[in-house]
Image 1 (cartoon, rainbow, N blue to C red):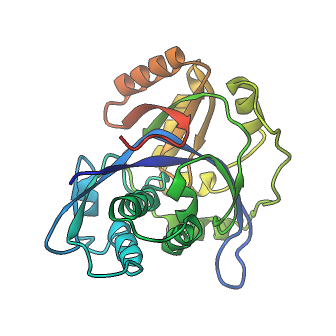
Image 2 (image 1 turned 45 degrees about the vertical axis):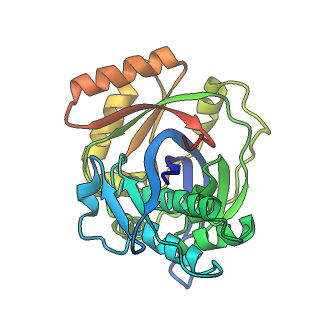
Image 3 (image 1 turned 90 degrees about the horizontal axis):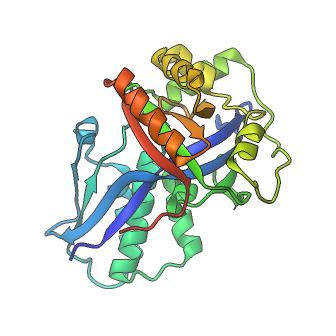
Length: 295
């Protein structure tokens, strides 16, 4: 028994954030796409439900006994009929943690899809989305890993425009950024964004058209993230100066930044150059879109 589910990195192509409501939550509007790089969740036999974490970024989750993958598994298996199956999960952590990539929510979504299919748990897509949404604001979006426009707290989803093939580079300066801390800094600035969905075409004809349109959009958390982690500004400055970059922006609350390129050749060249200039950073070549296969 070793079924596998892929947990892709989530990228906020734009992220508009409004003033917090009485409940403290911020309304948002974000166009999300998913990368063909991410973590992997594997199902295996076990005496007790548990999650084993390994991989290059597993140390960043050390001591986190009740992570989102385990919470997702418990929530789904609570709906299973009959005796609890003797299974465990392994999480191969290939994405940085606290990086603006939705890694925890994507891992949880992968676990939900994997367990429902492998164990035949009788829940429909709507109920599965509800479980995912209960685990985090971007949980429902990360469940399926397909491009979406997210509103509300992130749980109100509608189809994204048809996206062209997006060749990209992800760069993280290997600093963790606390999302609550970024939001506190953002609230302190008081410069809240308009979260009305912007006019969008049904489809972008080219990546150049899409990047030009995204240039008029924003990540409202970017300035606050840079204030807390100045290395993010270094990443953006480097990417913006490179000839292959059509658009460079922070994803989510950081610290990962992405650069969109016009072709695979240009993205390859950019990734190689950034890795050579800053070998201490995490630099990954990828494609954005989704959904991506599990195998």
